Image (cartoon, each protein chain N blue to C red):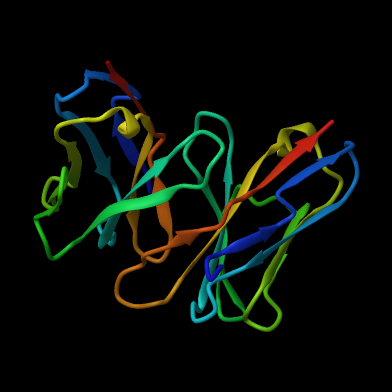
Length: 109
Length: 114
C-alpha cells in the first residue's frame, strides 16, 4: 500500500545551523508533496509544498527538493531559530494525503 | 474566521458510549477529509468526501465509525461503542479539488475514552 518514510525521527541542531529532513514515498501516482509544522497541541500548518512538475522550491529560510525518479523529497531549513522547534511532517498526495511519522526538531541555544 | 472549524474541541466519554464530531470546511472547498492522530504519530487518513459523495474509506475505519456529508458542506464523524483505543485527536481538513491537493486543517477534536 501507499507509504511515506521520514527520517530522522528526532533532530537536534544548534541555533543558526541548518536542518535537513528526508522522506521517501511509494505511490508513483503522488503528484503533490506538502510539509507541515505542528506545535504541541495545535493543528498541522502547511509551511511549504512542491508539485511534481518542479524539482526545487524555496521560501525564505525553507527549501524543498523533489527527485521523482528516486521518489525522494527533502526539507531544508537554514539559519535555524528557536521558533523552528516543532514536529515536522512530510506527506505525499494524490487524492488523499499520506503522512510520514514526523521529525521532532529541537533547536539548541 | 474563514478557516476549517471543528466541534467540540474536546470530548471525554466512557467506554461503550457513542460520540459525534462535526467539521465545517472552508466554504468554497468541495473536498473534506477526516484523519486520526495519536501521540507521536503523523495524521492517519480515515475517509474523504467530494461534495456529498464518500469516495474512499481507510481500512482503519471499522464498522463502528461512520461519516456523512449530507449536503456537501459540513461533515459528521460518529463513533459507536467507543473503545479506549479510539482515544486520539480527530482532524478534519478541506481542499478545493484541482490537479493538486492543498489541504487546510481544522483545530481537531481531542477524544478521551475512559
